[in-house]
Image (cartoon, rainbow, N blue to C red; front, side, top):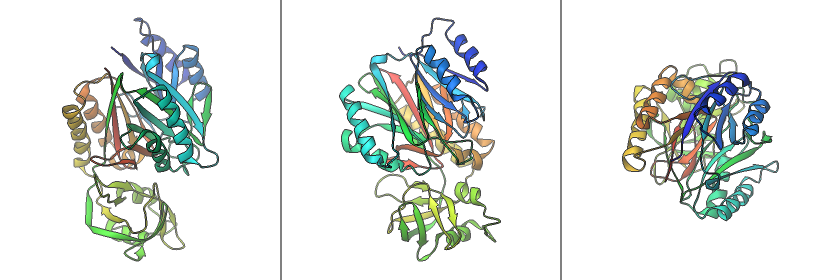
Length: 379
């Protein structure tokens, strides 16, 4: 049976002590899921793990946790003694922004190793189109492919995000953990919980993730109207509130809607850039600010997953949107503890810039303001 242990620390020395302590009983980890602040000494932490013979899947964060205490500017690490024959790690960069091609090439390598690969994925750079990465994996492995992951964070500075593995790191690339799904069962659930408001409306002008008008009115003005945000101006932009409290909810043909918060406002025409694409002609709804129900929905999502797919687990990995930390405040601890209690196994988690998972009842998507819980179990 696979064993997992979670450790954390706010310095390389603390991590070293925790790592050595974890191995006192003969535990010999082969794989580390590493979530770390850009303020930490990334190279030193990686060298420490590398010197111990541990393979690394790593990303920088907007905060990290191994229990219900959320940390910042620290490192949180899950150590697993997974059979090395059951996993591999790939590291790719995409300076040419050819996301789909790079992902497809990575998927081919995974298929050469495992007949039934499942993937954990983390990407870096704010411009990266994570949906194109997902399409690249689907092109090769098929629509049914099991992928979970996130876009790396940077303590909310929106300056540079890093993904890394042994001896390699990049500000514009991805790290991919391929698992042999014939040996390791992996399942996950992406839940948001923001309630929609009003009727569905038409996106009348957009290009990619740049939304200009909804029902022929500037999207910023409509969002402000629905959210009761008065006197919006460049000096008083409420940009964090706009993104975290009042995201657009992009309606899908099947499955739950996906959140598309406005992250960057263009004041010349009151348009904004969302975290992911919002196709012209698509339908959106506005959102109500979150309340207590949001936390309950996430915990319920985990309970459903346990009841229907994963009655037992060896480890729990959580990718939670940085926007949830901002919007929910102290409630986020209740959410994390509620998830941990469902399986009561070692956990590691981070606050990300975007979450990658299958929408409930739907397709692989890039999400925002969403919590994606991923459980692993050796078969």
